[in-house]
Image (cartoon, rainbow, N blue to C red; front, top):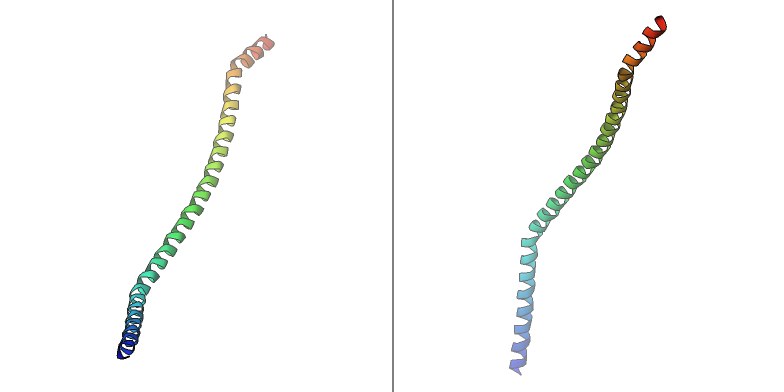
Length: 97
């Protein structure tokens, strides 16, 4: 009968040791997990900032492209008129004669 009591006592001691080891492990890993969560949050905020900057860059790029197209069409129109100038002057000179 004493073997049964010794087995139960050994089982209880094993459970206590398991609990103590589990508590020690949790106490050790909690700061590491908190640091990892903080690092992940920091990375996420940086990714959000990069994403918003990329969006702003696309908007600015669209504005620049629109401005370039406007200036290109203005310059093209001006060049067309400059090319017509000799013909207009010839017509003007002929009409003066």
